[in-house]
Image 1 (cartoon, rainbow, N blue to C red):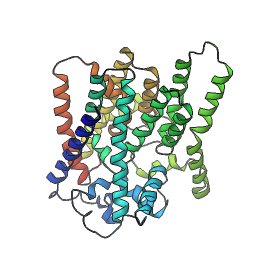
Image 2: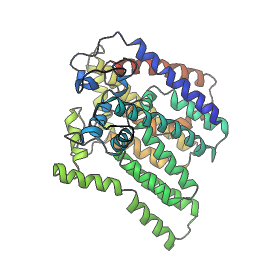
Image 3: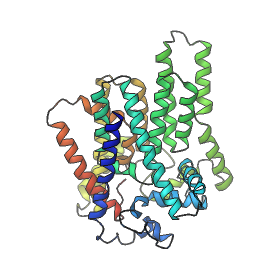
Length: 385
């Protein structure tokens, strides 16, 4: 099965070059040139080729900048990925920002992380499900319309790897290592903190504690100390550098995308806001299409997780999934949600239980076509998620 996983990974990776090739002669979006790396450095071969430099578009620019130049005002990006980029680049010669060694170091981390992530995701799912269901879950994940983010200089691959490793080690009752990878999760992206209640439930369920004995309390204490440690350290760094321990949250306001950083907004209010956008804004505007994708992603993710509950998917998986889906929506926008769904792997597991014969071919064909189109636009400076 590992050979099959490696094979589909290679096919998927080759597929991702097709939209880049198709969009090579399309002009980059005007006034959005700052979203590619050559706003920050002179062009150089071979990274200046249209098959390569778009892999660092948007967030990739910031991760490479942080890895080479440390933080400036981009504190909304968490530090583990840039640290790994700088570390690997230094091993091979230099940590120069946007340099060729740094670029390919970042790319290598993402590719290797995703390959390991789907291997361990398969191992995790095999603890409860058949070989067929586990393998098809990976197929559903890789053909999801925004899965191209796993191949970019983004944190999705690293986040999924740490998430799956933490849950897999928890199932093996290796609690220290499970907590360790969960800690790495929280310094990759802040939403990783919601793995704590999932692991607490997993520990309780596995041990079958009819009474909360002392060992259970010690285990929970370990969770509450080890897992948030990285997040606390970065918060302290924010306090020292920007005089605000929550700067990583407040900096989100710099994006000017309607995200609230001062309070919570009920998701139904956000749905209403999106319905007004869709019914009042011209469909000819690209952002209208993005809004449609975002609200569809919320509906799709919510619906599948409700279906997952009825199909009795493992509760610890669902606890993480529910928090990971809902918390980003409390900011009053679904911006980024088409990408955030990628790491909520129970969604792709649950798709196996849709029994209609037409579902698999329609999902795969539609998913690949939409992935092609979305990645093509992304490569030319159009924000997707």
